[in-house]
Amino acid sequence: MELFDVHTHQGNLTNTIYNLKPNLIPPDSGNYSAGLHPWFLDANWKNKLEEIIKLADDQRFLAIGEAGFDRLRGPEIVLQKEAFAAQAELSYRLGIPLILHCVKGHDLLLEFLKSSSKIPNIIWHGFNQKIHLAEQLLEFPVYFSFGKALLQPESNASQWLKACPLHRIFFETDDSSLNIHSIFNAASLILGLSVNQLQHQVVYNWNKISNRKIHE
Ligand SMILES: [Zn+2]
Image 1 (cartoon, rainbow, N blue to C red):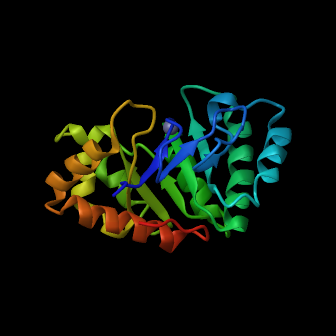
Image 2 (cartoon, rainbow, N blue to C red):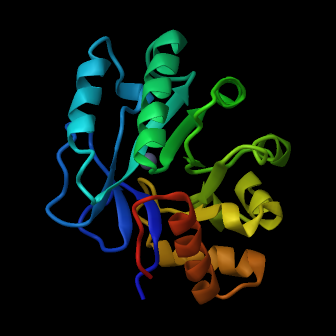
């Protein structure tokens, strides 16, 4: 059984969503996500978005992302908000989730969620925020992807995983060199559920929120 890794920067693995580099070149095989990461946004972003739209019919293109907000790195917030809104619109239109990168931008996400009428399913990747911030998001179609922070039992991520509704969870390796099995194993210990049950859950979760289905 290949465990489902919703967000990774390692290519050529099966049952993963490989996040394309800024050059937007899809891998030879396997599923991928493509987006405008806030770190790499510049005045040319609309042209880059056109390149992403050209990939839209490829059924291996499973998610928009990483897209989002970063107050520590990247261009001015006005530009980040514009680029995010455009990508959220694309995600909504294609019926595929948006993988969120969010650093010190929780308020910007909430502002978007409260003011937009067409909100896509959003997966906050590498989630490691305080529980009360996570709870504010539950009234919206926001999902949580847990990664290496689960290896620390006291992390915010580990605490939130215990409280988070199961239909909102995903797991990821992101840019770490970890194997996705170690993340599932950590989650299994925290939740008292088997790795099999968790795999079944995340595949179910994905297929519920995306037009582009995955198989177990
Ligand atoms: Zn990443």
